[in-house]
Length: 204
Image (cartoon, rainbow, N blue to C red):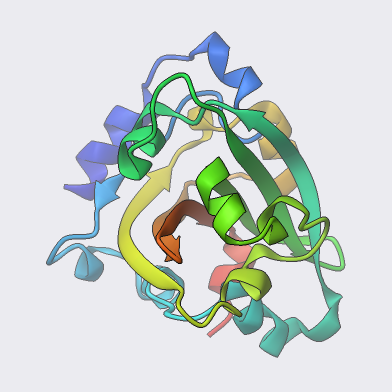
């Protein structure tokens, strides 16, 4: 099932409009809902990171210490992708804050992330999420006592889905597994997509 879905993704047509919405993607990734049975189809190393219940940044810091850093790749108010709008129940003509980053350790690419934060969520979080700067998102949202994880999807992304800029930035030479999670903070939802680069999958 995973193989056929990945093939469909790899031949997805280029959409020229996406350059205004993403540094990472030349076309929107295809996602599979995290339903029963999906977990055992993933490699063990991918399972470990996909089903990590806590902050990925905290887990990275436990291994790399203070060398973990964030590089901002894209930070703009734009219309999210169609599937992102559907997950967050957003109207087509409303902008959200879209933030794409690379987490690295001394320049070693580890995780790329794309976050969709609607205006309502920024408001209930008292604007903390719109002024993150180089702070990792995980260290901020996991400090909220009532953070809820609502649902999760998984993906396997092949090279045609990435932009050349993303390929060069993260040194992508093979398919990349990822997850996306809907979080809720005081009834304000946000969508966090995280993509596990080969170096991070070597960490147990």
